[in-house]
Length: 277
Image (cartoon, rainbow, N blue to C red; front, side, top):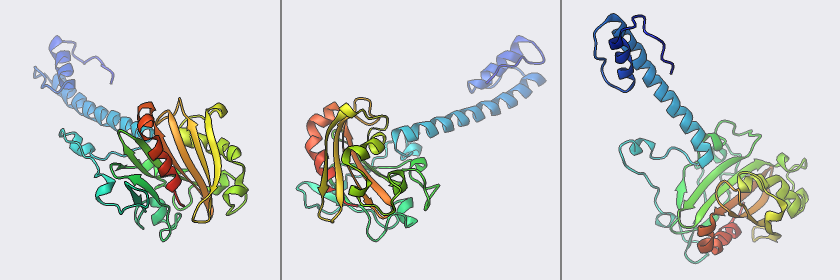
């Protein structure tokens, strides 16, 4: 906000205007002071609202989470999702539970882009919690015809890491309709396309730890990756599982920083291996 000079140049008038900007009543009663108080008081509120709105729009996509608990946060409270072990059914992996989204879970499922009767699934340790996907990342604005990848769900555990499921139209990887994973390209060839979605930034070839093609019990081929991500958005290590289904490619990415990785790398690999489209 600019500080335009008052029509009357008295010290009281300009002092009054500055007082309004910090939320205090002006200490004078001149016409200039009253006009400036109204004008600048409204302007200050508007500026605060606009700055807050811009900050939230920038912060949400970077963090990959929504504004869950923002209202309570203003009152000094923290809203935290329940641990998945409290409400999800047991998995066939010891100490894990199984997540299957319901028919209303995400914009893509509600639109039928992701089959609501046969959606993706994966398993998680019982202590993980679901995060809220920012609206701008969820594909809500473009379903059922999104041209860019979107984020379906996010889960995390402060001591173990973060998991996200991303979906992209298959034409982003190949021109062949309903191509099987092995028809899209080799493991390393596909990694060149999906690498930025694993790291959130860039992926250098030398950061690849392992890549393998694995036929899972649902009959689909999955490309499994482990990569070092020193410049990753969500951590310095990642494991990922990618496959195709119809005209979609689905990618689960599990990430962790060095401290989390030392503790949870086994669990993160289990999560990635449990992913089914």
